[in-house]
Length: 61
Image (tube, rainbow, N blue to C red; front, top):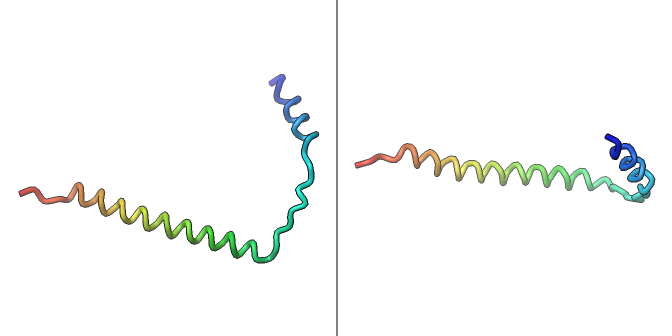
């Protein structure tokens, strides 16, 4: 706890402004990235779910 406050104070003293700009198209890009990640995740889950399901439901002769 003794080191926490000086660390936070030192870190806060070194913060510099970023001068960043987010244009209106940035929200659209982020939304597309999220939708793409969800689609890829869903496809991966579907593939591995079918493999796992077939492992347990395979018919033995």
